[in-house]
Length: 156
Image 1 (cartoon, rainbow, N blue to C red):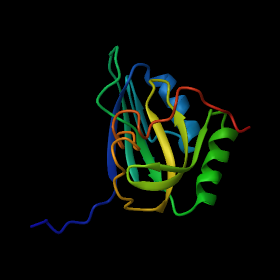
Image 2: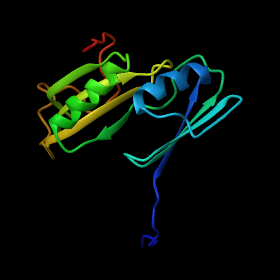
Image 3: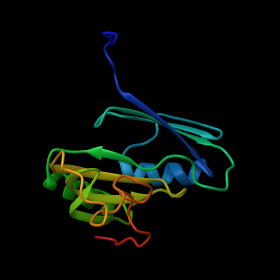
């Protein structure tokens, strides 16, 4: 039985190689200043969507177990508005419109942070699509299914 609590916001903590470089990226992506900065650490207190997002500087060589992160919005117009905001901030974006991913048809735009962590802003247009026969479908939601290709396009 679930416990009845009032959740204030989700918390996401990621490891980064260079916290200062990541702060610069996330300032542009979120459009706000970090709420807290310490040696090797930063916290962004995002109101929309409500998120406690922290960066911890940790040396690593390979990508972690994280696939990607996302912000689900209400409409394609919202996806385009976020893409425009990111592009105006100098971030490189990549669009995937009318794409089938994770058993849903979606419109989305992507950015990649300095450590290769990928973020999508997306709207679900049609949800709960059926599985396709194996010979017709790539492994949905397998590594690389929902992540953008390496090439990015600026929409500035």
